[in-house]
Length: 267
Image (tube, rainbow, N blue to C red; front, top):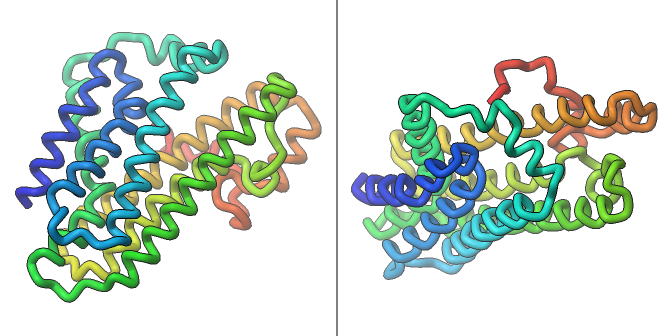
């Protein structure tokens, strides 16, 4: 438990960038927090570090740094992104209590997300008979998820350079409308998989499951916002309607084509 409290304190410190602008709690602060937590877990358990755990922590570190830099550069260079980022509902000053609750919720979520590899290493350090096979499976799945996300972002940037006003339906976007979100879900699924071989106790399972469910919810919530925004911009185009009808929203080959009506996903 002491390790989680130290990680929580670190998550509070790093994610406090959100006090500059509350959206940063979920964006730049999120990326920086995941990278910082990955480094901290590596430092805490360096003496029992295994190769699959090291790979997973490296994947999470790279993911977090890349996300923070990507969002920072995008904010500086993309006029359309700035318009979305600084729309009135985001710039309205939030009550102090709300800000604190967002800060606390984000820090708890980030620790929950990083907890599976933490429990794996902690339990290993205490002599538990953990399964390294599950750690390898998780590391590989997580790495594939990050690669998918990076490729999706690159493909979108390339497509927008060709036609900034057209929706993207090339590359990975032929298979799923939000391949970057799918990549992130896959990455955190890989992270969570480690629990199956980590000899987790009941409370450890609960912490890890809440972190995993929480980030999956965030991804579907983000996909819902994107769906509504695309419908507003491209909804009158017959080719977009056809694309949206035949292409799953976030999970490839899973026939979920819309979550717009699910208001409980509103973030």
